Image 1 (cartoon, helix red, strand yellow):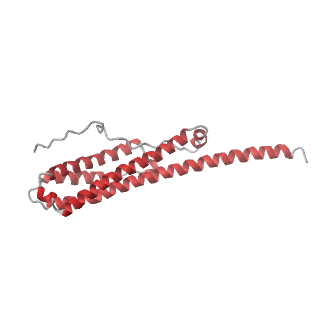
Image 2 (cartoon, rainbow, N blue to C red):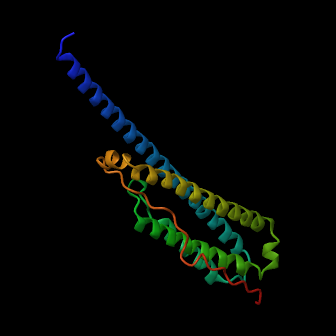
Image 3 (cartoon, rainbow, N blue to C red):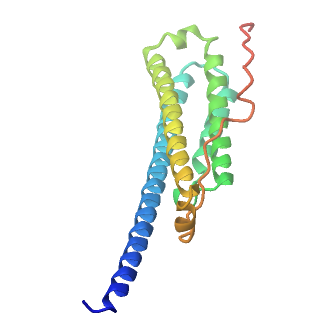
Amino acid sequence: MKKWLVPVLIIGAILLGIYLLTVGKYNTAVERQENAKTAWSQVESAYQRRSDLIPNLVNTVKGAADFERETLTDVIEARANATSVQVDADNLTQEQLQQFQQAQGQVSSALSRLLVTVERYPELRATSNFQQLQSQLEGTENRINVERNRYNQEVRDYNTYIRKFPNNVIVGMYGFERMPLYEADAGSEDAPDVDFDF
């Protein structure tokens, strides 16, 4: 065997090992990032379902002739504001996420006020159409929570992966950055006051 062949084979093996290590780390980072983006799409889809239910709920409630119009207007405006907030999953920033979260929080707040106000209208609560819509909204709120939790889990896995050594060195060369988590709304740690006096 020629003496020059041994160093060439060793160098070739080292280069192949570095290449395989780099490609593997890069591909795993891409996969985890895409999983997080897909989870974000599921969050948006759940919020879209809620947004799609709101016009039906508003129209059903409008049927009660003396129902407070201001409450309905608040729901309609909050929905319009929330649907105007665009978030780019490929460039998701903490600021975008907070803006999205704030708009969705306004919708949640307006819907809560609407449902509390409906309590004053027993004939409206008794209609099967309203009961179905209320049930669908409750189910949708549960889906939203599940999807936000799934998104946070995927982001946590991705963020952890890109920050571990030696992954941080390898994928850092390709510009992989941390993704923001979906955080609880400000003030959500405080229990709401319940007042049944009308």
